[in-house]
Length: 377
Image 1 (tube, rainbow, N blue to C red):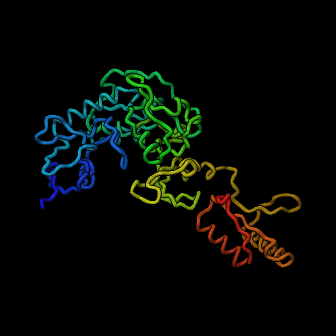
Image 2: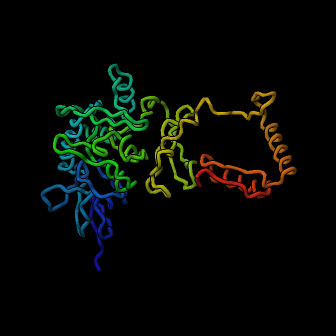
Image 3: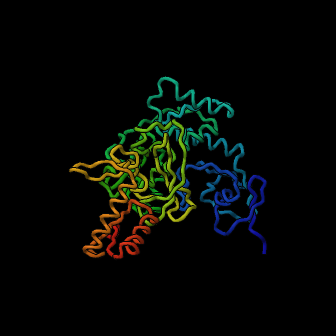
């Protein structure tokens, strides 16, 4: 039986029946540029960036949708492919307000160029996705200048009517990734393409604001948006150009154990994303609490020391004094009224480990089964 082998950029590679050219390339660390492609969803056929050249075929093919066939010979960066990509990138840049400030740049001087753009006068309206935009990265990679085609303008106003996500239609490239994420990954079915032709836009329920639709604000659309069309409301409150550390951790809000990446500036969380799509159990998905529920962490109202009421006032004390006080009170209550006179409530805002220790303490030390958890309600 003959092996399933294709050749990509002179590399002979095996493939499984049904795999796309893009899947085979990615599995073998061969880069093919994409924009509308979203892993684990059906192809959208909108961006036309993943086009590759197949020997013997007249037209370029979409690698995200074309199935690998035995003895295919594929070129991912041929002159014909590059010309087509540059043309499509120009069209996408011209779709809206993409002030990416792309110009001829020495790749070795990219950092200096970024600093120059950030400090130059007139950049007050710099896109919130600047420096983290896939379209901008492609424009730089293929040296396609912004404003290559006249701007078509945007007839839809920016939506700021909810506390989590800003929808800037002037920067939307209609790639459909947000819709795929909402419908095929989260299965919320809250958004879809609406209208047609030049009026085409991503809409929620009867073109209502997100807050009045079926959106649950999981932020999946936000995470997959390749440009600045969907940005966190907090993006306009934090300094996105400060040094940022990315820290992998586990979401503390429930027992699922979702993996997330914290983006930290000056010891303060400024953004949360779901971790790698290949990482269980959440595969990069998060709920509204996991993605947006972190302002309380740096709140000035948080208690930093235990308090004990003395003479009618709450007084800050040491942890030793507080723990001794609690132990004394619990022991006295238990001795006088019995262990079942005591009940313990734990929280969904602490870790599974802390909840486990709480129930061990309740049963083994206090000798009662009176323990409950708010999530059970």
